[in-house]
Image 1 (spheres, rainbow, N blue to C red):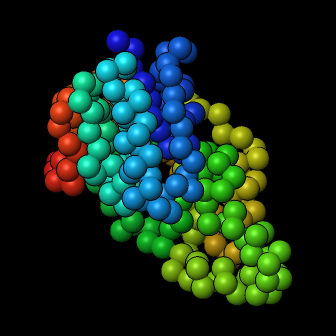
Image 2: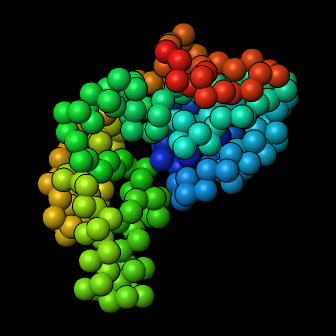
Length: 220
């Protein structure tokens, strides 16, 4: 059977670049992270639709507020990342994510997928708030939302197209909300290793009939 990718919008382009052109995708918007229980139900429904028709089923998610905990397939293998979130995936490992958090605390991260989603980052909420409350009050709300952030970190994946519009978006948002703009190199290596089915401690292969548990994801 052919594989299928069920992924968050944030990782769609990286998966597309690595998978055969006839691969079937099912994509969920980043905004679904706001409701982890709903996202989990939607992901299970997507798995159910693919179960037995595709193998393996790649899940383009980290732990993401435990939204992948409890998922299972009865006939197909699930392949998932052992990662807290997509930032760890784009940095190549959970440890790299933790190291960066220690080295550069107070960072808000953006990637091409977050920007392209159009509703994925907190900055996309500003215009809605401005229309509702006016510029002064909207800015006040945002200063509270971003009080613990010092910089906006734009993760660029080498070998993939980084649009000028992405850089403009990220740098403009940093300037507008008083954050330092930082650009760093990420990697698609973990996604590549998943799609090539390379044995890796950062990647979990879930046999048919087995349910993803929190311990499965946290155990490295």
